[in-house]
Length: 106
Image (cartoon, rainbow, N blue to C red; front, side):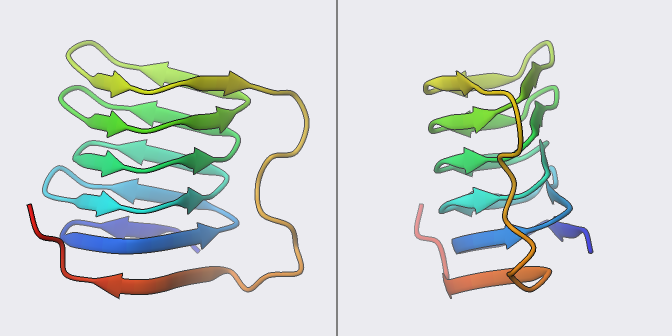
């Protein structure tokens, strides 16, 4: 299923569907998902089919994707590798994993 993060999370997230970092969300870690939508702040690397950085969303890290969308007023600092074919997690994993969550210190 889809994951919505509106708080602080330090850890890795893997999903076969969509991960949303809401406006009040702050995530530090690795994310693997079919789609990542960022309205808040994400620090880490993303692997998946598409990343969509919404207005005022912030992404600091590298991405490996089929497609990247950076909306006006969004921030992206990192490297992008555009690939074709499957880049999402394989079917042998559970739907959602959150690995080693900790409270973020900013």
